[in-house]
Length: 477
Ligand code: NAP
Ligand code: MG
Image (cartoon, rainbow, N blue to C red):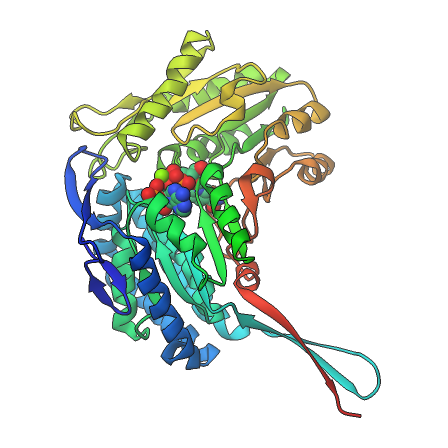
């Protein structure tokens, strides 16, 4: 689709310029997208403002919720089509794409149901006064999203804002915006008024920068890298508006010697392999108590060596990564660790018959990784797992908190006291005990601390981010 979606219609954009989008599985061009400019962003913001002041803004919360819920049903009706588009655009295995579309529909169900349940409250105050606290929309919210879960991100970021009553403008990632464009059309078909949802495709430094700096935006929701997140926050500061930043991670899986290995091993593997490691909350470090290290890491290595990467249609454990740059980046982490002599404990395989031009990398397990190494500190965003031994509980906590990130942590132990102590001490926005949900849990508040960002999405908390709280004090005697 080589056009933006503004004010309920496909439009070519002011310059008419387009750019190629490659299919990661083949490396070949499969579509082109419009290169949005500041003028296109301005058109989209104006359309959103008009919708907010007009048809969209006039709907009751229940009416908004009903439209969002209808979109959930529409997504189910177009399930195979959306999964196929998502798989082609991102290269992800079909099973992953199908899980993503299922999750997208769940976001619409959840926020459709939540729209009319944002209640304010009443505060007892002095005699002769009534005080109420209400939550109101910002007006127009801006959304800049990455390429790893494009449909789910639409569900997560846009829908919470729409449920609160805002009109939205989205700049999706240039590598993967096809499902977002399709979802906007489906939303129109179920009855969303023109201008409630607007999408401008194109480059981050052009369309994205223009969106985050636009004075008509009341709040920004950004998901992506810490580097770009800083730029977005600075742009928001110029307009004195707030933003949520959902950034990267280096999330630890902490395995004690009393853990249930049979339960932990497959989940530790899945948490890094899911979506070919391109998940902000990927469990990219596995920390194992020293006396259990060989046995546990050995079991992970056996499973890791069975992993295979292939095309979406092959539907294996992994797909390609998103583009050649990312392929080079992930490969450079692997090559450098090998040069440094860090042991390779297991390697998966790239399946026979994948197209030569596709962006495949071999899933790799390293360990023991020296503390302070790049593999401990930097997000790889690929199927690379790093193992680290630790001595005892306090060493485990020190190691878990040794990076600048703080997104998710997994704790594996049967000891109830330890479960609670470690959960309280580990720096993360979400902690799983004897389980792990990389990206899961629509109902659960999600977000980071430190370099992983700030603000919360998912669940009811997201609705608060997309709202302005107003206190109304009435002196009536
Ligand atoms: P990215 O390079 O930061 O890009 C994210 C979005 O920002 C894209 O739409 C990008 O446009 C846009 N952008 C680039 N430069 C911009 C600028 N100067 N101003 C405004 N927008 C700009 O991130 P990515 O490489 O796509 O995604 C991977 C990162 O996202 C990882 O760090 C990952 O951990 C993080 N992530 C976090 C979460 C979370 O919930 N915490 C979820 C998913 C991903 P282009 O497409 O043109 O580059
Ligand atoms: Mg990018």
